[in-house]
Length: 115
Length: 107
Image (cartoon, chains in turn brown, orange):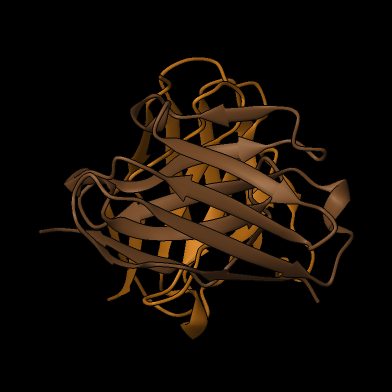
């Protein structure tokens, strides 16, 4: 059974950093591209970033480029999202998702950016 | 960015009804359109990928069609567990984008 479990969310002040993790199981992690998607009541669902199987190719939405970094450790079956210079508009539930078109999702983790 | 417009935003229906949800892309996305179902407090779940392919484990009452810019999700006979919000999603061009959703509610 495919499982994706996010961790690392929480309350953080504007301008600070947070690192999300996503532990994968139930499939051969190194064979799949991975992604992060976020959701808010006002903006809905937004793709945030994607990473290729080996980690050599990464893609970001414009609003997070230069501030967020997606990475993965295939030996640990885990992907990450390093979020720097956080803004209030980054407040959202963040989901880890498998494949470029998100066939499986984690349960989500809340990130709140507020002073 | 490609804009995805879903209609209606809210659809009231009864158990057993046949319903059709619509999704329109602002430009050609070929066949690269997925449909997701989301229930309150849960993550989205993939129903249909690449316009008309049923994800493993999804009941056959769900089907998708369309091409280019206009797509539909049809539920042939609504079941109680189908009342949820449905999102379309294009993965033809970066940045990938979602529609705002259609909330399917009990009439």
